[in-house]
Length: 59
Image (cartoon, rainbow, N blue to C red; front, side):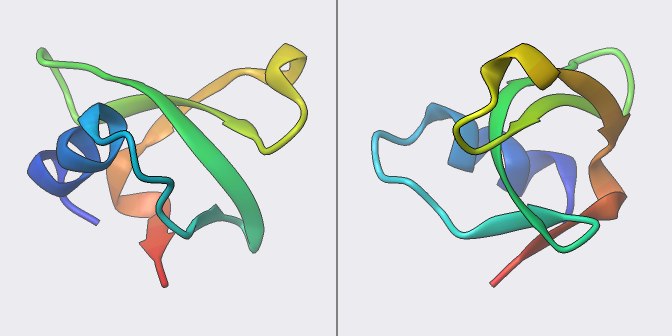
């Protein structure tokens, strides 16, 4: 996935089907400075992590 698409998904009120390592995730924030995003697995907001945007897959 690219940074622009990740921003579109993060800003949208509609939930998109996105995975990281085959786990469904929620995109919380997209960094403007680099190609990193803050995500967490669906239903697990306490498990936030920062990952490279190119590791996300939209289905």
